[in-house]
Length: 447
Ligand code: SAH
Ligand code: SF4
Ligand code: F3S
Image (cartoon, rainbow, N blue to C red; front, side, top):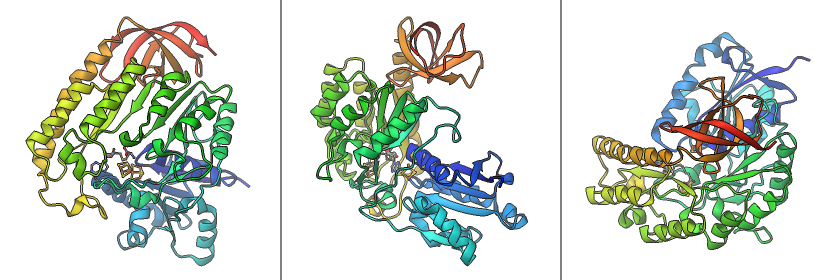
């Protein structure tokens, strides 16, 4: 039988990207991927609700398929991910023509859901969140979802127990659960056998990996176990909560040659008053002490961060402290957001909301300060040699290769040979762009 066609559109974070791949793998015996929704028998929209804007995007995306649904009787339209989890059945009020609503654990039951839909001919909704849900092991063959990647995501944890006061994630992803180490190792081994050289371990707070389970390794130990897999060259991970960044983990990053020298360490805000209201459980001083310790052991480490501007009650003074932290820490890159009210969260109920205009201005200010710092840091790579894991041809120009340094900086470079995907090469940096470096190939380190 010819295979049916599946179109998946993914919004949100890397974990959603990883979930989209898993849902495809669960269906791979019956479906092949298409990049044209008009051709699809099944359309899945994997959604994000972390801020209001991405949630709105979902409604407009789904709206696009209303006409298509009318024309194609057998088309199945499904919503998965965080908005599906957040809204559940309520989605049907606004979008009565959807067939599947699969929450952040529900998508694992996609096959059963499709069968039920066929039998009962009415929308199927799976949004239960089980506190002890163990995600089944879904192994990637690394060819059909994206063609023979060199890098891959591996989810090591689900959910979050931190309840930062602005954040919806604990409500839509449920309680923190660590995947069994055997499953993680098996998944990485399978990826490595299929050509993957670098994995990024995913979790809302990877630093608390294993803490809730009796016989699990901690995160530093897990990194060591994964790094023993032969043929795997690089390990990245995200996200690290500053409060759980331990001395043991800092040592492991410093000593383990496979662990990349980059840490994404969300600061969120520079003022202790705001950090407290955010329920982040660290002070600016504690954060700075960890940065100092990291840099004393790993001088070349690149730091990146997330920031929220305009949290309820944030004064100009508070905001200035955020800008000062940027100048002090000098991140490679930052991801900054205007505070957005989210359902269920504590911050939604706070008074002293900041106007859109002020949030806009603070965001622009943050960008202005950081742009200069990023430029200076990127300029400091010019004239130096760096090691790059080649991910393929550059998107901008097919006569260039692209990859990243251990510090997670994108490098586009010219090379006499273009068949170097998957190789670790030395590149001489000639130029700094806005968010990438440009250089030329020097020699191959490993292939
Ligand atoms: N677990 C990760 C990522 C969470 S979501 C962490 O703890 O860092 C990614 C980022 O979105 C957060 O770091 C935060 O900066 C931002 N974010 C989350 N909720 C938000 C909200 N209500 N308004 C604006 N930004 C938000
Ligand atoms: Fe949200 Fe905080 Fe959990 Fe990150 S650690 S997912 S910001 S509650
Ligand atoms: Fe968005 Fe859910 Fe990720 S809310 S950021 S897709 S965990």
